[in-house]
Length: 130
Length: 130
Length: 130
Length: 130
Image 1 (cartoon, rainbow over the protein chains, first blue to last red):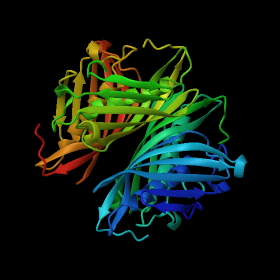
Image 2: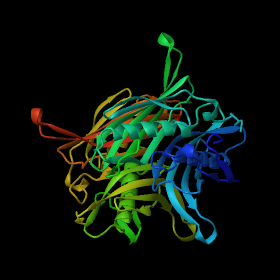
Image 3: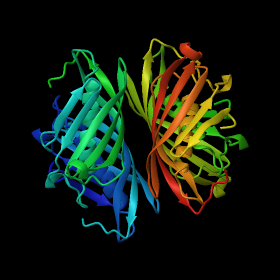
Image 4: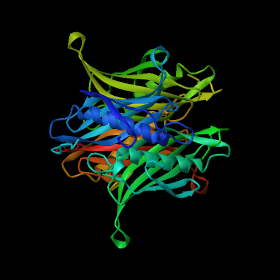
């Protein structure tokens, strides 16, 4: 996250938003942000969202996620959001979305670039160093 | 790919192997390589594998992928492999695996850390700059 | 669909709801509706939802879907809904949900039992017999 | 499974094969076996394969699966196979394949029609009635 320059914009129970102002290093051959970076952002957003509803003294690991890439990730800013759909005792399920934003104010353009569905596992008794 | 220090080890028709010697910047809170980096490696390996079987004058985009994380990505080296399962005219399907390797020679330890299934789309008439 | 006794409750642009009153034949070993039946319902709901936004003289095929099973599918009625997230020229992306409903009126209980993300392909020039 | 006429052909540690001779009721609008039936077969094959490696006094539930449909499911016989990739204490990961077979002997045609990746959860202390 630090490596790519992403920041957590919002973290509330069951929700997390992470944003990134793309630097040249994270672009792939067509000038879009690399799918792996998009995956990193939204996997992290889902993981943090899930973690907000976990018991104390536990940590989170991603079991799996599935990511659809809907449009080129091009813009001034990428915003990845994670939403908890079900918070279970052992497993939690989240959904995620990534939007690319360009321009400002009334002229702002916002495009959905990726859609995620994720399974997290609660690691009881292993508090997270973060 | 350059940002994280990954290199292509092998690229043959329908197959690609990419490896990474993890640097501290790609580790997450538990000291494992971040799931997003693992995703980046194996998504790229699948994409390159698919691309080897595409017609000339075309390029590749990932439609979606699904990634299971099986074990902590800890080791001296991560190796991501992509295998084409079906090369279609419009869509190609690949599978991917990521292993973590530690030690050398007879003492080498190799652990399967991630499993992927991916859909690629052929972009006809849009040659890839790579 | 006929085999398992499912019916289309609603079909509007970008949306479809399909319901099923479970019969003993569709239950698995624990008395829940089999995951495959849940998959059939929601894959169909997503496919029909996508089809509503397709051009004339085309038909729909599922490229892939991913299904999370969140709770046992037990109830008087299962309702599967499909929602189009992006309707593209070649590919469309949908999300789906399945709820189990029990009881009536104020005493009704509604449980989310499954969550889906799906990729459809538009088959141009192949009108659907349905 | 009984409803659609599927039978278990092989069940060995970490592996299961299930086959189906398609009846008219399981076909969709194009005359192919419905994607939901293909999903039912391969989800079941993966689940049984996982179950073979579970401890005694436990049962199996599907957490999630992801299915790519590669070719129309048309043939005299569908064969779904499930393979355990990792058998964990809480979660097990399987892969699955479905082939359509037509003809006999040297003239037999075998087509890969679906590819699956699945997460199972071990329900300890809940022996399966099957």
